[in-house]
Length: 198
Ligand SMILES: Cc1cc2nc3c(=O)[nH]c(=O)nc-3n(C[C@H](O)[C@H](O)[C@H](O)COP(=O)(O)O)c2cc1C
Image 1 (cartoon, protein in one colour):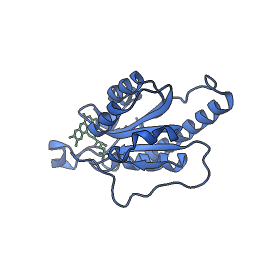
Image 2: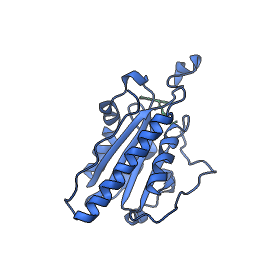
Image 3: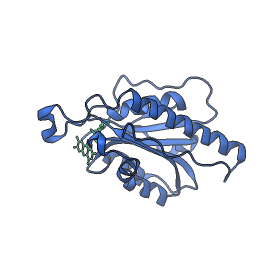
Image 4: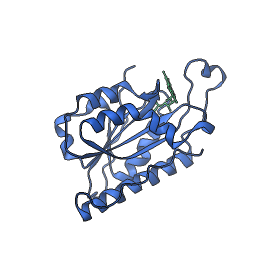
């Protein structure tokens, strides 16, 4: 499945962020993950681009890079994983992972989200990237036969999910500011954050 970023995308670069952040997003099923990305981008003053738009040689300009997509067959979208596979080895570049997945809301936990992120996390960690936070919540899912009865999780991510995504992004910023003040090794990582309403 082709993954592009919608034409009407807008770069959200306002204010004077002390940290430069970038979100790399693939969101095609119902643009569920895009909603989460927009909420985070507002806090982080981040630009959102598709994996295709990434210029690997320019990534060093960012202090923090988020990678997000829907979950397909238990992992991030292929375009995100392919990109991660092409990234160079680094020393401690800060990244975070986010996703929306289609399991029933009552089954959603932080462990589920982190399980969905395993392949991407392992790949990035093996290349020296430091994963400073992970966020997941449920999203509307009309895959396969689910479409016959309107799908699962209609209306998700909803207002509470987006509030959680905003809170998660704030905790990332705090972490980055803390690290900057205290230098390498200083500060504590943000708690891995909510998975929406469980
Ligand atoms: C082909 C396909 C495969 C999917 N596989 C999974 C899966 O393995 N696990 C899961 O929880 N959700 C799965 N989903 C549901 C999506 O992860 C979910 O709807 C997500 O919110 C879509 O995000 P997007 O709208 O940003 O693309 C799948 C959806 C599609 C269309």
